[in-house]
Amino acid sequence: MSMGRRLPAPTTLWSVATAIALLVIGAWAAVVAGSSGADFMDDLELPHPALAAAPPVIASPVAPARSRRVVIVIVDGLRRDVADTLPFLTALGRQGVDTSAASQYPTWSRPNYVTILTGAPPTASGVRTNRYRGTVELDSLMDRVRSAGLTAGYASDYDPLPRLFLRKPVTSPMPRPELAVLLPPALDVTSLDEADEDSLEAWSAAIRVDMSSAFGDPRYAPWPGGFREAARSVLAAGDPLAVLLIGVVDAAGHAEGGTSPEYLAAARQADAALADLVATLDLARDTLIVVADHGHTDAGGHGGLEPEVVTVPLVMVGAGIVPGASVVGARLTDVAPTAAALLGLPAPGHGLGRALVEALALSPAQREALAASDSGRVARNQRIVDRSVLLARRQHAARRGLRLGLVGAGVVAVMALAFALRRRGGLQLDLRIIMVTVPAFFIVYYTLIGTIGHRFSPSILPDRGHLASELLKYGIAGAVVHILATWLALRRRITLADRLAAANGIAWLGLLIAMVPAALLWALYPTPYVEVPTPRLLVLIPAAKVAIACYVLAVALSLVVEVIVFFARSVDPNVRLLRLERALARARAEAAERAATPSADASSLER
Image 1: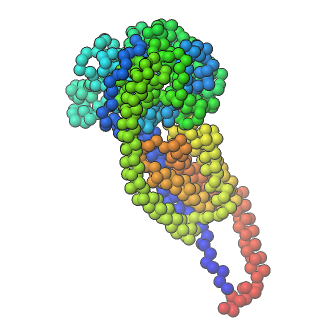
Image 2: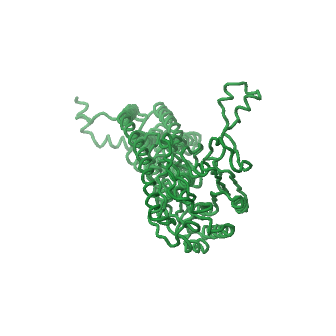
C-alpha cells in the first residue's frame, strides 16, 4: 500500500537560496513600504484644496464695528477641564461669555491654527498635520483686515505661524509700512538649474521673493520670557487684530501628560501671562477672545477624537460681547467669523463657520442678517468640498478593482513560490514552530500600539512628530521578541539546512501576513487623501507599512543568528559531538522502527 510521496529533506543549497530570495523580496517590500510610510504625513496634506480654486464669498458687513480691536489668544493644548481651574480666565468668563468649542479633526496644532484664522477645518483647508510646508491658499481673517486697510500683529514663543500666510503684496501701501516683515523665502532651485550656479544673477534669482506676511508685525520669540516681551510690543502697536499664541501648556502636556502637576503648573503660568497682557487692554473698547487649538490626553498627546482632546475653552469678553450670553455648539471654525463681525468686516470667504451672533451686541435684525449671510457662504463652500470628495471617491473606485486584482495576483504568486520551494526542501512549514514564532511580532507590535498608543488614535503622535517614526519604536520591540522566539523555537535543530528551512517558513508566512494588509490598504485607501482617514485608519495605514519594514529587519537578523549559530557549532568540538550523538540516536530509532515492522518489509520484498 502506497504511503504517499514524502517531501525531500532540507538541503543547504536550497535553504540558503530560499533565504536569499526571501531577503530580496522582503528588502524590496521594506523599501517600498518604508518610503510610503515616510511620505504618509506629507500625503495627508492637500496643498491645493478645492476651496482655493473658488473665489471667496465676500459679503457686505451687516453692522458697523463693535470693537476697536480684537485680540485672539490661542493657548496651545489647553484642556477645557483644566481651563475651569484657572482663576484669571474664569474671572474673565464671568465678565463675558464662557463656553466650550469643538476642535477640528485631525486635532493637531497647525491645522487648527489655520481653522481658527480661516474658519475652514482641516478637511477643507488641506492643512492636516504639523508638517505642512506650503502657504495657506484660503481667505483668512488677516486678509479681510488687510483688505480694509488695517493691520494685524502676531506674537508667539511657540510657532512661526505667519509663514503659513505669505501673501502677494498689496498694491496700495500699508498704513504702517515700517512694520511690514518679509519672512525667509523658499529657495527657488529651478533658477539655479537654468543658469550658471556661480553667477551672481543666478543666486539673486534664487532668493528673490515677492511675498509678504499677512501679518503686519509678526514676532516669534522662542526664548525664556520672549512671549511676554513680544506680546507687549504687539499690543502696544495698537493693531486692530492681534493674534497671540502661548505654547508652554502644550509643551508640558506632551512631556508630562494632561493631568500631570507640570501641565497644571504650565496652565497657571499661561493664566498669569494672560492677566499681565489684559492689563494693557481697555475692554470697554477692545475685545478679547481666548481659545485653545486642542486639548491633551491624560498621558499626553492629541490628534484624535478623544473628548478631552476635542473639547477646548472659548472665552469672549469686552466690547461687542453680551455678558452671560448662552452659546451652544461652538466650533473653532466660528472664531474667525465672530472676530470679523466684531471688527465690522466680512467673514473669511472660504470659511465653513458662523459668527456666534447670540454672543454679539447686535440688534435682532442684524443678527438675522448676519446669520443668513453666514448660512449662504457656508452652503456654497460646503458644496464645493462635498463635490471634491465625491469626485475623489469616484476616481478611487475606478482604480480600486485594478489594485485589488494586483494584490490578489501577488498573493497567488507568493503562494506558488512557497509551494515550489517547499517541494525542493528550501522551506519548511512546521506548524508547532509557526504557531509560536509568527504571531510573536504582530501580537507585541499591535498590542503596544493599541494600549500605549491610545487605542489606535493619532493622539499617539509626539509633538510635531511623524506617525511612522513613533510607530517604529513599537516595531523594534516586536522585532526583538520575534528574534528571541525564533531562536528558542529552532534551538533543537542541528543542521544549517534544517534550521534555515524552518526559519524560511517562519519568514515567508510572516512576510505574507505583514504585506497583505498593507497591500489592501494601498488598494482601498490610495493617495491623495482628499478625505482624511478616520483616527483608526490614520494609525493603521502607516502601522501596516512600518510592520513590513520591521518584520523584514527581524527576519534578516534571525537568519543572521542562524548562520552564526551554525558556524559556532561547526567549530565547537562539544557541539559537533552532540550532533553526532543525536544523529546516532535518530539512526537507532529508525532501525528499531524498521525492525518492528517485518511484515511490511516482507511484503515489499515479495513485490
